[in-house]
Image 1: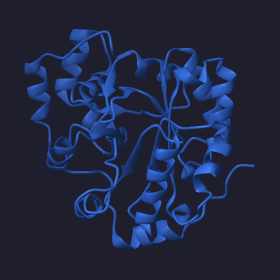
Image 2 (image 1 turned 180 degrees about the horizontal axis):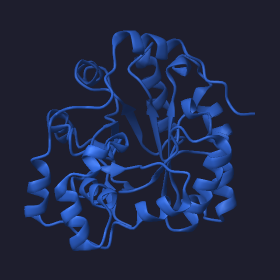
Image 3 (image 1 turned 90 degrees about the vertical axis):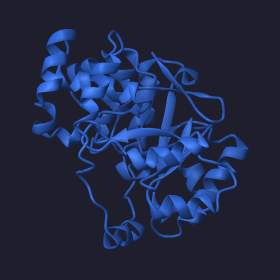
Length: 279
């Protein structure tokens, strides 16, 4: 495994398994098998309604809790719930998480961030982060934080490299974790000639080349899957390294175009939606 050093001195694995849009039964299996094959990072969220399943998968893997970097996210409807962190830990079946995010810049997100800071001080979160806080939201948060976040989780891939955001992150040593790392499965990205060419050179698939690009950009990456073979392939990216010239060629693909665009209306609905948690 390779690691990213966070601004609090702790390490985060460069690749983990994500559980977005994975039903509880499948998430339990994916987490169990991923940890058994050598993954060290698991990412989930209140909103994915599979935290209990993730906890079960962790236990079933037989891997010691101290060897797992577990990240989750507090949902917008929970920001003013003073028990949100403890309830999250209860669902996961753990005493702490390694990284705790607030999920959206929606609702009373400052109250949510204050919960993260409190959890960090109490040792219930070993690191804290923000999801989707770009542009004006990041600027607003900077004026309010007491503790600088260790991570931001945002959309990032070769078509959208977050170039402007990364300049702001560098000032504070905030790390980036990518979602939609493969362009939401966009065939046009996966079939770019440069990835086919490099795949042939290194004996890898286009997806593996793209995931390796993420790690060499300094990003942590969390591709999700319920297919055990895909999970295995996604981890098998650390035995080769793209050259500086190859990274420069990939950089030419940047279009500064994202797949998912949020609106103020969407953020309002995020604030109101209440997950129905697995019992």
